[in-house]
Image (cartoon, rainbow, N blue to C red; front, top):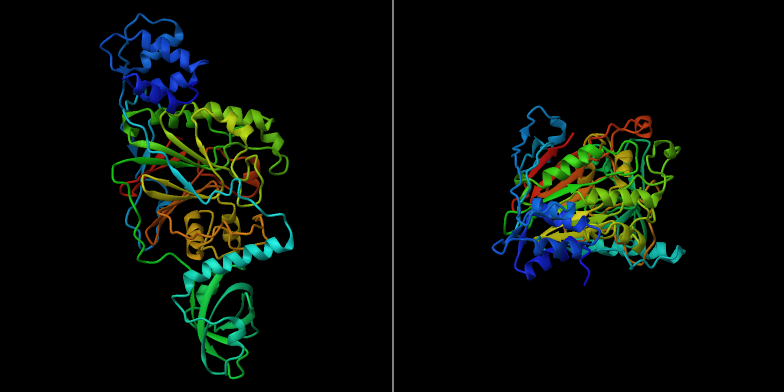
Length: 519
């Protein structure tokens, strides 16, 4: 079998009784003929050698081998604390348990990381790839909203003794009643109260939230098409429900995340944007070199939440800001950047709105042609969104286009670009990736709503908005990981000041977070 991937190289080395430095595997994987390079390297090893060094592989590939491995020169990088970092990035919800530490990445370290293990393969759920059934017909739209209602209403039925709208319409005035429905309209009355129309599979019923009630603030968090529950009292003519309480599907306060049973870390990044003139090539290389150091020895997983490349025709006059104008050449350049990553890392990637996949969400994974281009690490490629389970820890990966919608619709204190994790909290509260239909977020009609958050994740990872933000919401660690692209003229025109070259590193055994700065 040809040895095209680092994982196969590691397996073959183990079969022959050898361990290898991580960099050694990476160098072999880059070779024109990895299998032949491996054979030559092993043949030249001394009889008593048990571990393949990166220096020895280099000597073989360069044709300078003397038959015995050389000891590499090493320097150790310990990193540097940044206590003066922007405090707004550390804002968390009231139930936060960990405050992330921001540190400086080691830009010049040459230390070759040594590792005798392979990460456990990640398992993937909720991937739309190959499962899309939507044809764009009216019945598909009806099916997806009906499925959304049924699944999210199940999360609310234990909180209210609800009845369908047609049954409530038959009740006498003055009775207590409860409804679970999709928000079909929100408007204020002449007196400043809020009228919310809730729709279920039987009809529509009006609900009134009085402006002087404590729950009136919750109306500011509502989006059209999300599922909520209300209870209260019917008016004397039973034509309207006066709301006493309002409930979101939400993450239970009692949620306890799962953690790994050993010390292992994952790097969570997004929005690399290779092909842009503003792609931060040197910062990426600093990050990649750091991954080879002893300081990063426990980082076994790299999770990329979309926008591997800059794409073509994504926004007006984008061609003026491209360093690579061909989309396939962009992915080839991205694949070269992947080769800088240690060869035995497990990599999981989902697409974003700049990538060459359909724009409507959920997005299927890259097609076979692009997968063949990005084969440097045998990365796991899945759809957007997907739930990836790593070492028992479930990570909901979503590129994040709907964050624009949430930030545009809700008050600044509820969601903003400066605090993207607050918008992520709203999606967790609504238990849906993209609650509102018909805005900037393109949604594909399917028989099943693939964007509901049925199971509470341990980590919620997004990108897209190019801002760094993190915190905990009901014990779910929410991370928006910034980008690897400096400000473009388009971003400047829409007042986006990106947070770039940061790498959030999560301890999967504790869910504590460290932010590495590679600027």
